[in-house]
Image (cartoon, rainbow, N blue to C red):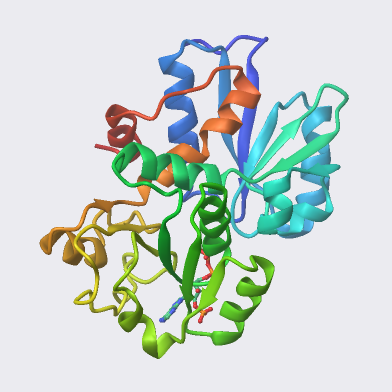
Length: 279
Ligand code: ATR
């Protein structure tokens, strides 16, 4: 696809941004759908975030994604927030509106749910019970998505207890705090187990969580996608649980942004997964 003078342009702001897989992802879709557009990495220092975001409409950008460390700071800069961004307390997608104003959105929650629905279609979230491990930024998106999808009870366990309590307050009455020492004892009646911590990622120790009490019907998923099969997922698969890796969440969270900037709802396919993994 040739980029012409009329190309639609978007990008990803981060510092550093070199690790981001979003350019591979969005440019694959642009090529696949024959769209005259480009998606570029935007290395933006934290102290320049405001100027960079405000420059988007001036330079004719359609919008951008935000990654570390900008997701929270951008909340104060954009002109309006969608409900999910307000609830989660972070923005991952910015859309430049026709009048040049900026809308901040958070697409992590629908991305998490869409991935589960695609990869574990037999899991019924409506009325389900889940256990979420971790209480950082990723956990907020996951919990918001689960509540939206109809999950009635979310047990939450995190090493730092105060963060568990804070999340339980902001997602009251759905979140039930579970002490870190008790996390393995509370798996017996859940339909879904989610790791939202960085444990299990390349270079990090694995999540220490014996699965003996986990029912065979429970689905296990991880937000970590490098490696694709974390030790947690391997352990769950070995005992017969359905597992869902974290790459799909990354791919699905990108769909609404692409749709808003480039006007086409893109599909998450096996070929896309392979492309983003560099296979
Ligand atoms: P993210 O935005 O990706 O969720 P984060 O906000 O830094 O990142 O959160 C990281 C999560 O991993 C937290 O829940 C953190 O637990 P604490 O709140 O106790 O810090 C969890 N985590 C990271 N390293 C951990 C470890 N060694 N043991 C247990 N939990 C860990």
